[in-house]
Length: 440
Image: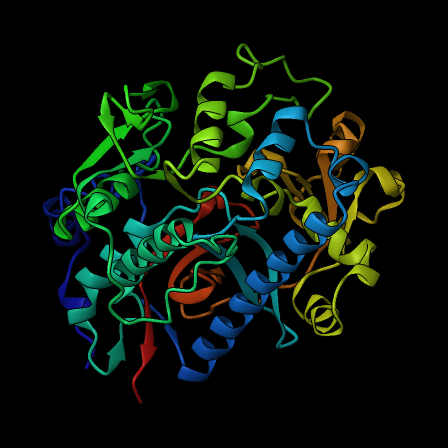
């Protein structure tokens, strides 16, 4: 029997405050969370998990292709000099944690609009919301229960891969040992590097710190500007030497900052963080520090990777081509198509590194004049066009909502769900819901 009716939103908000992690149950005066869960059948959960792992494998194949064809860095991706430095120094390593955004479509198919392999967020909401509300929903399974331990095992596997002679491993497979050992140095000293002037992901930083300290780590928080070296050339953060850095500072912020609109003002700080970036790249190359996620995500985070899947399919394996057709909507570089011939209702425009609503224009939900304005002011080399797909809405609400099933990958394995519901194709109207799986 479900008991969510017994819990008011005010009571839930007090429970949320008590976690000392999430302190914003309301956003712009509206409830940010939904108490009623999104229920998945076991079959749906398995389909979504398999799809997420296949999407992760597709991006891993992209990384292998770019390693074999380095000319793509210039000819296809158009990376800046410091972005290329990140990729080349990574030697193809790109993954520790990622979030694949999946949709159950009206035609029964599953589609992925993108994968955040650079600085995926939402972990605190996904774990804590399920944890707080699961006791009110009997006969359900919380798919996020083991997330903290799986996260830890991914870090262990990543660190061990760096320490071993064959540390060219590109996906840290933490499934090989249920209780991997770890070097004493890692258990003592870690750091989380993030944009300390932005509050959006503070809950995620806080929960990461808690999980790590519960496992005996000494955790230092800081920004790229707090990086340094000690006399033994160990990487330091706030003066503290560290063995592993959790990187939550986006790759396109470490490199050159580029505008994506002709009407956009130039960045006040367009130059790369050359001192900080080169310090880390050199230290990682010499085996003095482990970085998760590795800087190779500068390629996999770039949405041109999905255009590569469609425009250069001869480079992919036969199995990958099947998965591309099944899971990835048609994606094209804006430089290779006539944008003004696109039918507004059939396409979505996305900037290649954008992750905010103003860098995604969904034609089916955009006003005709806004669509035309976007077409005339975007800088094509920074954009893709992606085929629109119709999402099957949830109808157990006062108004139908579109669910975005974020499936986390840890070391390439599906590890949990983060579901957002919106009335349109952007996150402006999104609320986060707990995600449970039926045990029946």
